[in-house]
Every structure is written in structure tokens, then in C-alpha cells.
Length: 312
Ligand code: CP
Ligand code: NVA
Image (cartoon, rainbow, N blue to C red; front, side, top):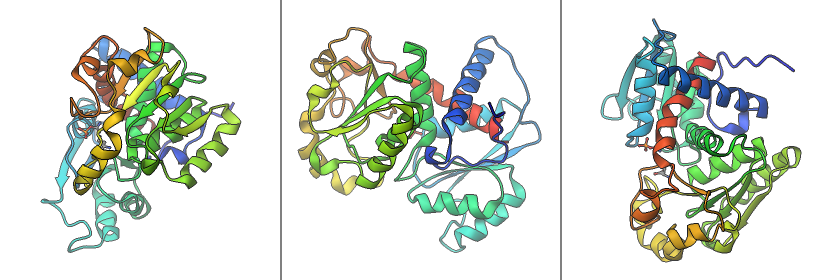
């Protein structure tokens, strides 16, 4: 088997990564979590800097990057659009070129996937996608880690995403599941199906890993699921769609009755957070015994640290 080396790589979408590379990152994240739990402290980012650019708000992603980098001796710098020129008075290319001269790496959270791609193209340093309208890859890595903490190796497991099937979280899960051989079902009303070209791409990838990728409006498809996943009905930047989403998704709430339709007492509930309790999920489920949402949130930090350790 090839030695896995990811030095210098960006993480923009899991489409750019091979199955063995994702497996390597998952194993590294587990190691990093164990080190933390054993109280081990290292300084593997000493002398390094990372620019954390945020066009949209964040609790978990910002805090995961900032603490993971800082506790290893690195210096994170938070930059909101109130602080820097980013496509406003200066082109994204020029900002990227300058940041690349000053920082070891860049994290970007914002609207367009093309922005994070331009940062990667022009900065010359590793760039990490901390969420765009299209993808949320670091989230998906933490989700698979959490699945594996509960069920062992993820390949062959069944994950059902219930809700807005066209959003960034559903799309990233579809890609990582296809790459790793995890069966993935998007349960969503017809108006919110994930883009057909991405579904086709994932199905083609899945042919080599044995994953089944399904899109259906049928809530009964949660039967047998190891994990039921949901996300907000209205993603950041889509606030104008609120009424339409409620109309389409009202019957897609993850409540205990839906969890029971898995037919399994050991099935788990996942949510990337932030959650709007009473909308996409009930308190009973997210605060209940099947929920792993808080482990999942913690795992954001370990997986993000693993990605930075591997690529820096
Ligand atoms: N899950 C997630 O990305 O959370 P934040 O929006 O708080 O970063
Ligand atoms: N789909 C959500 C994810 C938040 C982490 C959003 O984009 O707002």
C-alpha cells in the first residue's frame, strides 16, 4: 500500500480525496482524541499561523480551528468580513496571494465554493473549507468519526439524512459516504432533492466501494438505519426561503416516532448543530439517550486537528 502523505494539500471537498486518505485522517483523529483524553500536550504547530476567514457566523468550526491550532503552539488569527477586504475592495486572488505570504494555512467559511477554490489556487498554502453553500467537509469527517465510535468501521453501515436534501451538510455526507462505502439515504421532499449531477457522481464513486446512495421522499426508509441525521431547515444565507421550507419539511421532523421507525434501539441521532429544537428535531430526541450530537460537536476539534496535522 502507498504511504499516505497529505502535506501541502487543501481540503475543499471530499471529492478530491481517495478512500485511503480519508481513512488515514479518521485514524489520525482518533489518535489525537486519545492524546487529549490522556492529557498529552504537544506543540506540533509551534511557529505556524492560520488565517480563519468567516463570512458567516460559527460557533463550532471557529472554536475547533482556533483551539486545536492554539493548543499545539500555533497562532490563529480570526478575520471576519468586517476586518478584511475579501472581494470587496480587493480581489479574492490578491487577498489570497498576500495571506499566503504571511500564513501557514487558511480556513474559509462563507458563501461561494468558488471563493475557497480561489484562495487555494492563489495562496500557495493549504486551504480548508469550513463551510460554503456547497459543502461542509470537516463536518462530515467528524460525523463519520462519531458513527465509528458507536459501531466500529463505517463501511456497510446505513446513515439516513432527513430534511433539506440539497444543503451543504447533506451533500458532503453523500460524498464521504460514497467514498468510504457507507450506505447513504437522503430522505427529503421532491422540491429539495440534492443536485442530480452530484448524486450521479456519488453513485459512480459508490460502485467501487459498495455504498448504496438513495434519494427518496419516504420516511419509512429510516428502517434499519444505524444513524438518523438532520440539519436546520433554513441554512445560513437562505433566510428568505423560510416559509417555503416549513411548508415542504413540516412532516420531516426527526421526533421519537421517527427514531422508532428505524426498528432499532441502538440507532443513534446525529446533528451538525446549531439545532432549532421544535423544528427539524424535537428536544426529546436531541437531548435524549440516542443522541450523539455532543460527541459529534467535540469530534469537530479532533478531526480538524487531524486534517491540519496531516497537511501542514
Ligand atoms: N456545525 C457547525 O459547523 O457549527 P458552526 O456553524 O457553529 O461552526
Ligand atoms: N446547513 C447549515 C449548516 C450549519 C453548520 C448552514 O449552512 O447553515
